Length: 220
Image (cartoon, rainbow, N blue to C red; front, side, top):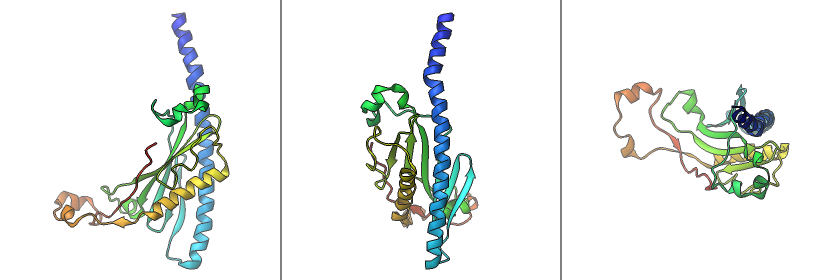
């Protein structure tokens, strides 16, 4: 019995303590990301107002684990996972000497960014998709790893050299915004929407399944 308890205690020391540390640090970085995103949004809104006051750019603080950035028809939803994660064994990050040197470095906090059409949420169009634009991972040493669409892919490939800072967080936010702006909305083929059900009509505030097309995540 005592041996099993010691094994459990050792596991808790190795994993649970590290996971709690990663969670606290990720929460702190998420708050920093939120603050920087708000600053970027305010600056962009002021500049855009001089060009066309009808183009809305705004920041929305949803809660501890989510905030949103709206610009024109696009909406980016930034979310922090409340649990720490590890990458699959075959993932390139697990082959890094930095990770192999200290297994506790393999635990990461995760921040994900999805792109929606703002009207999809505004009008509760339940069948409209959202697209994963990017993900930011950070460990107990504040080393980070980005992955996502081409605007994020290969920006900082070496986790051993990547230390989070205001500058890198700002790059992450702005790159996600650039990715969303590069993809325009598209109507699906005529044949796909030629017939709809009454149930579909009653569940939608407006008809016409406009979607974004063209997102492709990196293969890493």
